[in-house]
Structure formats: structure tokens, C-alpha cells
Amino acid sequence: MRMFMKLKKLLTIKILIIFILISFNLKNIAMASTFSEEQTINITKNLRCLICQGQTIHESNSDFAESMKKYIKGQLENGKTDEEIFSSLVEKYGQWIVYDPGISRNTLLLWALPLLLFLIGGAIIAKKIFRKI
Amino acid sequence: MKFALQKEKIYSPKMSENQIFTDFQVVGLIEEKQINFNEALTGKNFYLINIWSSWCEPCKDESEYLLELKKNTPVMMIGINYKDKKKNALNFLKLYGDPFDQIFIDKQGTISINFGAYGVPETFLVNEDNKVLKKYIGPLNDEDVYEIKKITNN
Image 1 (cartoon, rainbow over the protein chains, first blue to last red):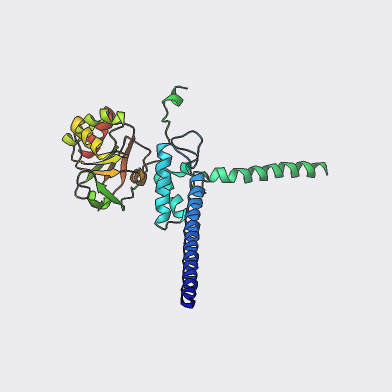
Image 2 (image 1 turned 135 degrees about the vertical axis):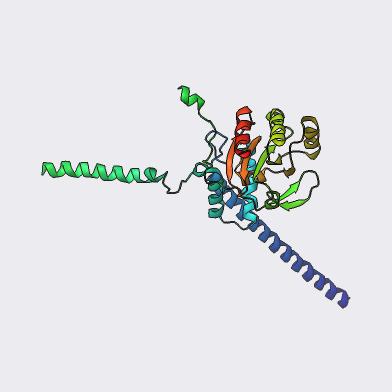
């Protein structure tokens, strides 16, 4: 009887350990996959669907967007960083594919114009104020 | 107004400095052998990469142009079979002719993204340095064939 009780106790402990190990592993797997999924969404939200009207790759269900989503997942699985993925896509499709264009010769005016307008506006206001004084 | 209507609707990057990325694995349509795409681009001065599919209607009309290029240019013709079934792809080649020296499959459409493609049909004329000389979005026409012949036969 005592032997039986001992065995039962041992079995319970073993089952408990197995459960803990399984749940820990499942948690790890779930964490890893959500991380990659989130990263994929972040990247696809910043990419323009080039064959759609005003949609991101994330929003679009077009053939092109679906292929792009799979391509990005594959790149992330291969250990590529977000920057590496963006720059390789810019190389292939041009700056138009990203919603956040970097500073280049073509986009310099876009970046500098607000600052220029601010300076010109400030100069006009300052001139008017000093004239009154 | 006239010029705006004639403008290309699809944005396409300038091709002057573009070089296609070729370091990835591809699987052949017929032999189903896996190779690095680099290995496919050897031994010729020019390569014509054509993305096609059996379900693509314009690809049927394009076939005759590709066959003409195969016959009259020294170009290596490489087909990328896009999101297709093997049986349908082989039937298509039987029906409309096979202009390709090599055909690789792109089941998920991700290989075409390596070239910077939008869909089917699409054609890239590439030189021996993997530089894209011309990119044709949509089916080839008489003018495109004339242009390819002019570039590759010189």
C-alpha cells in the first residue's frame, strides 16, 4: 500500500513537471511568433501597395501585396532587420514604395521647404515688428 | 490633358543603375531541381527574364513575341512561372509554344519580388553583369520586340 502511494506521488510529480515544461515551451513559441507577426505588420504598414489606390501593403489583399507579405516574412525568418528589408525594397522599387522617404537629392526640397518657409515667415514678421519700433 | 492621359499609370523606378538581386534559390519547373539563380545567368551576354502564368490572359498573346525573340536573338530566355500549377503550366507551353531555355517556379510570388516585379506578365532584359537594361510591365508588343532585337543583336 505504502509502495503504491509512493508510486502515485512520483507519477503526479512527473505529470506536473511535464505540464510545466509543455506550457513554458508553448508560451515561448507563442511569444516568438507574435513578435515576428508584429514586426511584419509594422513593416507592411509602412510600405505602399504599388498597384493599388492609396493602400498600404498591410491593408491590401491584392496579389502583389500578398506576395510582398510572404516575402517580408521570409526575409525576417532569414534574420534580416527592418532597415535591411526597407533598403532592399527601395533598391528594387524606388523611394515610392516607402511612406517615409529618406533624405535624398530628390526629396531634399520636401524636407527643407517647411524649414525655409518658417525662416522666411519669421523674417517677414521680425521685419514688420522692428519697422513699427 | 493629352499628355496626362498618355502617361504611364504604374510607377516604375529608373533603370539606369539597377542591378537585379540574383543570390537566391530557385526550383526548375520540369526537373524540379533546386539551384542558385546565379547559376542560371551564365554563358550569355543577355538574358530575358519573363514572368508568366497559364492563367494570365495577356501571356497567351505574348507567347508569339517570345518565340520570335527566341528565334531571332542570341538571348537566353528564362521563364518564371508565377503562382501556377505544374500541369497547367506544361499544358500552356504545349498549346502556345515553349520559348524558354530554362523555367523556374515562383509558387508564392516571392521570387518575382527579388526582381522588383509587380505581377504578370513582366519582362526584364538583363546583361551579363545582372544589370537591368529594360523592364517591360505588361505583355510585350512589336515595339518592345524591335527594341530588344536592336539591343541584343548589336
